[in-house]
Image 1 (cartoon, one colour):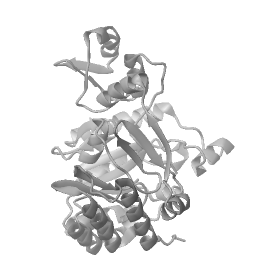
Image 2 (image 1 turned 60 degrees about the vertical axis):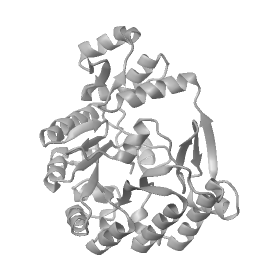
Image 3 (image 1 turned 180 degrees about the vertical axis):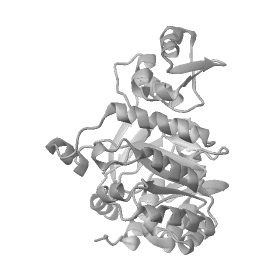
Image 4 (image 1 turned 30 degrees about the vertical axis):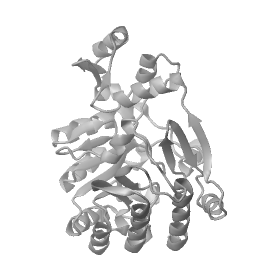
Length: 359
């Protein structure tokens, strides 16, 4: 049974947190992007979305050409909702498709079917929203017999200007982690992960998409301005459960559980669960990592060349105009390559994005 979303309660708590964070003043900078995500904001309904954006507009100046995105589930989308979102200021939708295979969607406990994805895309266009992205998940367990090629074909047929893909990962304390630990679901296959990642690069690139960031593809320059800001190290402010912020060189994040967040905010307490300021080594690693994860590249120094030369010989990167850019094969090794270039001991493989959905 689908849970009822406490819209009025959530909006009240978000407004209180905004007031707490800003101290009753307006945000001193102009917002270039707004992103309603981190859960299922489409379940707020058109009026809830309108009220949330109005609360932001009352407390900050929003650029006239700002990118305003909402994450939506296909089952929450219809032409009326799309029109109301558009009137409220939304001009971009990230649609959580995940797969076009009904067996996969049922295994993931999704509330939509494959047919709902195309219907949602058509409804959004009918409602006046053309800037659309769909999310797909790859490297699913073999027993599902999902055809990644078919999913890519159907995504291309929808002709959305943006596609994001995330490899299924085993996050702690999730059902998938419990199933994997018990042996009910086999552990992930790194070869399958790499093969499907590289297939997506080939197929989507051939269809006219620019693979502009590890997990993201865009047609005709329709990149996600909001996510791109993260990758340049721009500051951002987040409110709500599990929201993250980067302000004045300090990162902070809210408690994740809704009830804990609501209780703290309603009682006048800070919902912040933790803070960190990066040290020099961490900043160096992040600078390299952010530069390498997009096709803009990383501005390399002459002292980097002995390391970079080995990557080029392996087919993991190339250098042009002083910028090092990783190939898709290099992106599969992003963490370990960035760590070696930054001179740290951190290492990991198969990284695809700032967040990975899990079942």
